[in-house]
Length: 403
Image 1: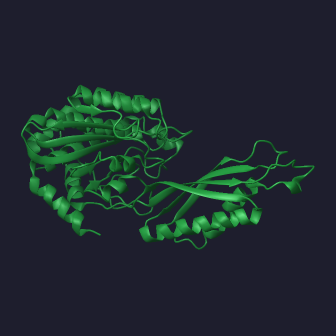
Image 2: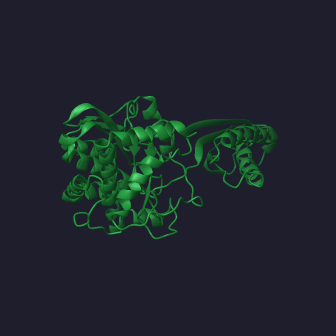
Image 3: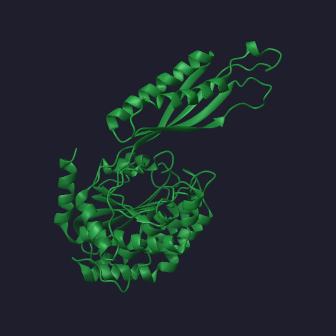
C-alpha cells in the first residue's frame, strides 16, 4: 500500500489544503510511526492502557491541543481540543484513536495503528488550524476489545457537541463501508460446594460441571441460532485441584447479532440456559452483562467523502463485507452522531484478525504505510467538513432520516 503522500494529487474540493495536510503527515512520519511501534511493543489490555494513553496525550499536547488526561471517569481516556483560528460557530469534528491490546496476544487487532493514525490526523489538522472554524476534538478511547470504553465516554459527555466521528480500522481488505454486530460481554459464575472428590463426592455440588454443561448447551443451541448470531466463551476459573469438587467456576462469554431486536432475545435465552445448567447441577448461577456495543449506523455522506479522498491515492474502495463481521463500540457512537469507521488493509487478504499473523502484520512496513495514509485521509475528510458547512448539515440530515 505504499503511497507517495507528497507526490500524489489529492481529491477535490480543497485539493491545495489537502496537499498541505498530506505534507504535514509526511513531515511528522517519524513521530507518528514511533508511536505506533512503541504501543505495539508494549501491549496493554482494556482499561490498563496507561503507557499508551500517556504517550498519546503527550503527542497531541506537543502540537497545541488542550489535553484532559484522564478524561471523564476512565483513567486511560484522553480528550484534546484545539480551536480553529477563524473562531465562530463552526463544526466540532471528532478525531478518534484506540490503543488497547488483546490479553495474551498483544495487538492482534492492530490498535497501535489506530492510535498513531488518529494522532497523525490531529497533528496534520493542527498545522492548518489557523484557517479552520470550529474545533478539532481528539478522543483517545480505551477498552474497545472489552468493556466498550466509548460508551463510558459518551455517558461522561466527552462527545458533547461533536458533529462527526472519524476513525480508521486496520484490516486485510480496504473498504469505506462497514457493518458491525451488536455485542455484549457476559461473565458467568457458578457457585457450588466443596467436597473430597474421592471419599465424599456426593457431598459436593460441582460448579465446574455446571460450566461444562453451559458450553455443551451453547453448542446445541447453535443449531437454532440465526446464521448471523454468535455465542463464544472461555473458562476463567475451573477449580483449584483435581481432588477437590470445585465450588466456584467462572466463564466469560460474548453474545453477538447484527439484528438489535434478536440480540435482546438471545440475551434472555442465555440467562435461561445459565439457570437451567445451575438447576441441573444443584448449583447457583449468575450471569453479569457488561460492555454492550451496538450495530453500525453508517453515514453515507461522510463515507462518500472519505472514499473520494481514498481513491485519489490510487486505491480501490472495496464493497461492504458481510462475511467477516466483528463488533466495536464505534457502533455506539454511530447511534448518536454521524460516524464512519472505514477499513484499510495492512495484511494479505484472508489474514484472520485477532491472530498472531495479524499482530505481526501490525508492525510491518505495510502497516506503517496504512497508518500514514489513514492519518492523511481522516485529516482530509475532517477538512472537508470544516470547510463545507452544508456537508455537515447533510451528514446530520441523513443521520436523522436513517432508522
